[in-house]
Image (cartoon, rainbow, N blue to C red):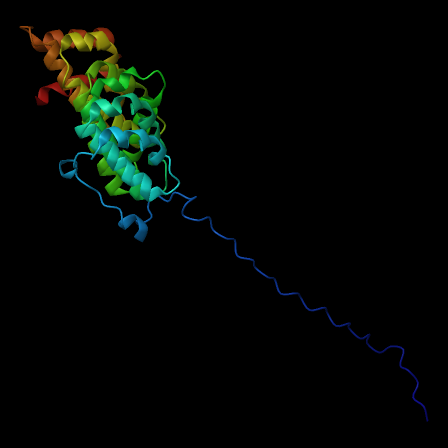
Length: 294
């Protein structure tokens, strides 16, 4: 006998469709030639570049002929050749400075470009070149009609502020060479804008260079820059984030105090009167605290 369908039987549950497995496509990372990772260790290619001390550089053979192709070689797409050409720049600065002088502004722009390059070896070699040309040309950097020197100064402050130690130390040497070879007052006018830079490390490096400039100046030079502005700048830096900036500010204050009170019989009274007349009470108090430690 045929079985009748049971109407109240449980309905069959349709089989759920299986989920499709997700396929994750890896995102290809940008190459090292594009990304500048400041904490990245030097590559094997970087290690092949020799960092030559200035005292070990030799004169350029046949310099009159070599100078004709120098800019073209500096603009090569082969970064190792650019490093070699930067060392040639250093040789010209040390031994044939008059030949390089007409090309100096173009060379500085090449240095700026090289410092921005992610190749550590190229960056460091360009910084070493800047030290040598500072020693060779000094105030001639201030004669550029363009902003080439301003670009170079900014790059040196940025490189001195980064975490990569062997680049940072070289940039510090270049900044010291700059301060040591240039007239303090015009250089101070270039540096002043960087004590308000957004990067606190740049502010600290600028403060150190300013301190080194001020230590070379007499009272008349300080007055020409603006004695009150110099003290106010120092008072602001005394509150800055990094101890290097604060220490540089204290050094500036001491230099100003010694120059300002050199011919004063009552040094403390004269200094106190000057600060109270030109600073807010809070800033004046912070400046006063520095002097008793002398």
